[in-house]
Amino acid sequence: MQLDEGWLRRQGPDAPLLRAVDRCFSEGPPARIGVAVSGGGDSMALLHLFARWAARMGQEIAAVTVDHGLRQDSRAEAQAVAALCRSLGIEHDILTWVREEGAGNLAAAARAGRYGLMADWARGRGIGVIALGHSADDTAENFLMRLGRASGLDGLASMHSRFERAGVLWARPLWAQRRATLRAYLQRHGVAWSEDPSNDDPRYQRTVARRTLPALAELGIDAQSIGHSANALRQAQAALSHYTRHEAARHVIQQGGDLLIPQRFDPPVPEEIERRLTVAALRWVGSGDFPPRKQVSGVLSHDMQGQLRMTVGGCIIMKRKGYFHITREYNAVKDLVTTPGLAWDTRWRLEGPNAEGMEVRALGEAVSALQDWRARGVPRRSLMASPAVWRGDTLIAAPAAGYNLEWSAQIVADFTSFLLLH
Image 1 (cartoon, rainbow, N blue to C red):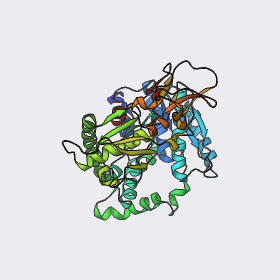
Image 2 (image 1 turned 120 degrees about the horizontal axis):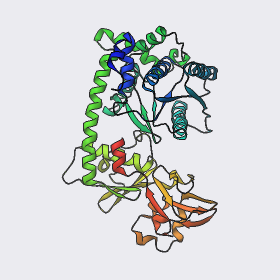
Image 3 (image 1 turned 120 degrees about the vertical axis):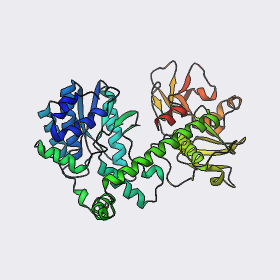
Image 4 (image 1 turned 45 degrees about the vertical axis):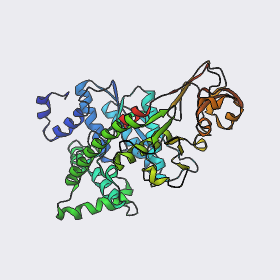
């Protein structure tokens, strides 16, 4: 803990909340901290608490609001956050999310857009972590919604208090605090907040879950009891993740950007560990933030009975030489473009004698023009989805295929590192 305990005791009912913020950085805070603020009660309380904590600690913080544009009042809510930040002497930026044409699920697209914008904002300002205002009530509501979807342990476990996404570290200092407690804090300090009208719209599952919670009180089921259960599941999840990493080190082979999982484990491993290995492998190879939904059970010996090849989650799974060989699907990356030296498909970085006009794209069908590609011992499908250096339509280098080795193709974060972070 960083704050002085004597000072904390003098803060009366605010002390537990300030302590929660302080304990989020028990290993020492980064040089700069970001606070994500929507204008709702939870995030406004988070902002006000961080302002007090930062003033006491001499810590530099900045706030960010994403205007999603999905409601008429969204800009006004962002401006209200900006006004509070000015009164607190906190740097604040408003980012605008624009929905891409053809984006699927609106809520999922908006969520991914918010995280992406805030991650770019953090990297551009040297911010080491972004704090989010999720509370114990969010955990309880998520639990009920996922219970209705027949989610397993991973879906029912409590939210991570710290996690990585889009290359940025995120923290939830108030994950154990009740929503009513945070609003009482705002009222004590005369801070206004905005209420999202969708919170009262019965078309949304979260609204139904929020209204259902009080009806469960007679059974002793409330946000606190659900939080205890969800936290116990999170601890069980951590134990399973530990053994998944152990078995990955024993059995999984990484070949460049591909992963090889034995068709038959020797000695055998529990199906749940095999499932976790497979899902993690698909996320790493497929560069996905989330596991593929209901497309595979994760026990590939069952999923691929009678099949030599299967496509799932932007990946191709092939039976090959006693392994399930998981590689990237070319169609999933054929439109990805970046410049040399930057990450491509989240995992690769190509470095070499860069020049104007060069860009990194998938090798694709150009692999057929390379005479010695078979000597690499890498499946053709893997090479098609590997990164190459192009200038217009001219292939400059394809390091994974052994073409022009003045260039190198490096994995930014290997599968072992991915398992540690996820």
